[in-house]
Length: 149
Image (cartoon, rainbow, N blue to C red; front, side):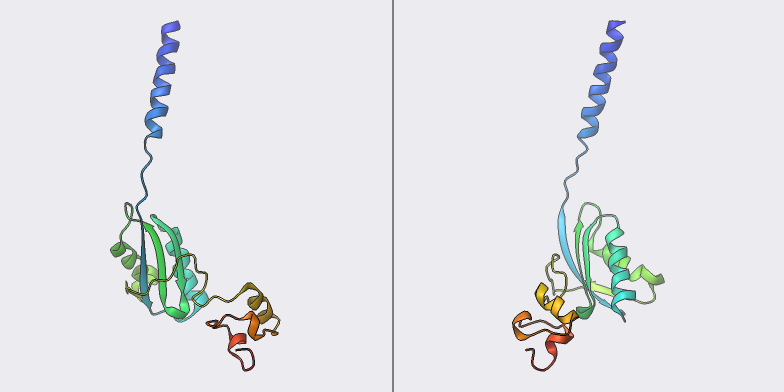
């Protein structure tokens, strides 16, 4: 009876140790895709970003409508640049979007292509932005108006 308990305990321990060794290493890569065919930020860019984010192997995806660029961080063990291009082109039945690898890479952590300070964003919402709140490369409409740059 005691030998059965020892055998089962050993079998369970062996199973747990073996199961834990399945840690695959993630081979992170980045790619910037130029996407043509996007006509709006919410319907097109956000849809592409959402679908890319859910794709197996994609660690992070940001689609910047104004630049027609998708910055994608992915696990090269799971997917490839070719797969990502084909995936984007297959969105919406393969009729709307064309993707190709781009040399224009922006940081994945960048929320927008032309970031403004937090204070600028708040002030722009209130239509009271001044020159000191906007960064030099800010492309928000309120910063581009006369007297704020």
